Length: 66
Image 1 (cartoon, rainbow, N blue to C red):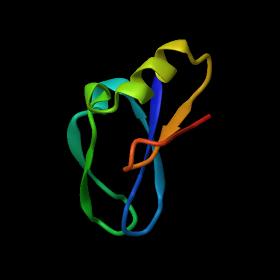
Image 2: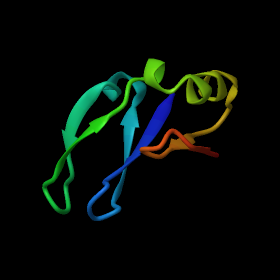
Image 3: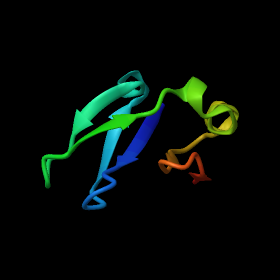
C-alpha cells in the first residue's frame, strides 16, 4: 500500500510506502520537515485504505481522496 504525503508549505506530493507513516519527513523541494500521521491517527482513512485497491490520498486534516 502506498501513501501520498503533501508538504503543507509548498504543496509538493511524495509517494511513500505505508511503513513511512508516523514519521517526520523532509520535503525535497522546500526542505520543510513535517509529520506523516500514523494510520491509527486517522480512523476513517485507515478503513478506507484497507478497502482500497488503488492509492488513497489523505490530507493533514484527515480527509481522504482516491
